[in-house]
Length: 543
Image (cartoon, rainbow, N blue to C red; front, side, top):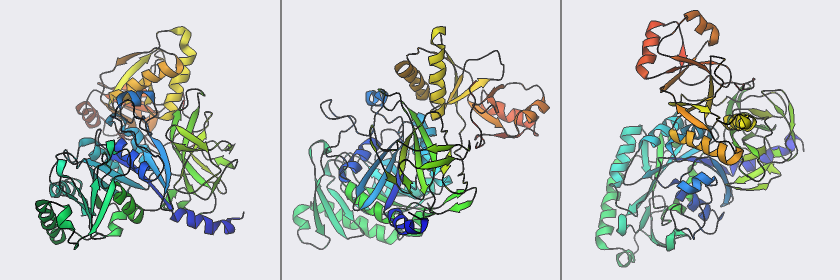
């Protein structure tokens, strides 16, 4: 098929795609909301809550053994489903704060973000941190205020907090009727209809929804009088004080449509999904070495935003998650690898759905495909057909915890080296080495303690290697902007350790922010960066 013949198909497929990631603080109910979106999207027939009884199914989106033991999302998976003739790609991000690095990368592949907030707690630290990344990327943000079936804060107060603290204008698309035990449903402001829900056991199936127009006298029979009057008063206030919905501001990430509901009881989930399809950004243009590239550009291009080893322990596999940016992906196609200049045949592409994967033949912009990765791909790599194109890389953020990882068993050296190397490729944790050549043990650098536990757990489970971890007394890392040459000019440094990252670049570790500032005052000529320079065109080195 020539590129001219492809245009109508490409245009149609881009138009019907929506892609988003969910950002939230731990325990805001992200895994539950993910399950319920899949339930309403028809991708699963019964939702399994994370904290539900053992007899119920494990939550579909958590596949790693450690996730299932703890009931948290540690890694990002991709869930794809059809809903109302739209193809939805849900990039499920880690809910645990120790895994923000993985979330940052997933946000690089998303076109929209859904900010999930617990109605009782409001904005929490991790949500604020991830919001900053969305802002940096100018992603449209949709807010779902969850857990209305429990006692919580006043809805108007929650809107005010988002406006004051995040500087985002809000527009309530729907409004809750009651709260806690008296949470009856929501009012859809767009359609001017009341949705009254009946609970279903454990929220495992879709809630039964009674829809009533706003002027219908039946409301008086179905809704307690005080709740009805409270709803009328609050809607009047909203109409007077609230802004109008502005689609352009939403797309620029300056206004957030707000939805109220309860993922656990399925109240409001379908309304959110319907409005999201209407307001969300479709796959758009991306910056590259050849300028802005539109999704309808006829050649295939994509970039690797995540690597994962051993998703299927039986096969010891490694999967590269690729976001399709332009053109049409076809099974068995041959692509160029921008960093190495190699040609690669993509023979076993997979559609990903948590731990279930099926082979796919085609994919379009906005989709995510899984490619078997025999050590070829690194995070941020671009693959393409036609003229050479390279997308912007994905930065590494400054870690806050550091530890030396030791292998006490010399006979397991090979397995240890292989495990460390494969886990480093995934970017689940940054790996550094001492600048002193006599010290060969890798230094793990992470955002949170749980990342260390996962590395040790996986080395034991997947590679059969017991390890020892020795925490180091540093909390701040800074990359030396002009490399070793700039560092050598400065001479001896105090109150800092010099290490090299996986790319062989110098990194300075400090005990605290004060030590870092002191060094910068003493050596103003030395340029330091908190985010690693983005690398393209070179392979990371081990040790």
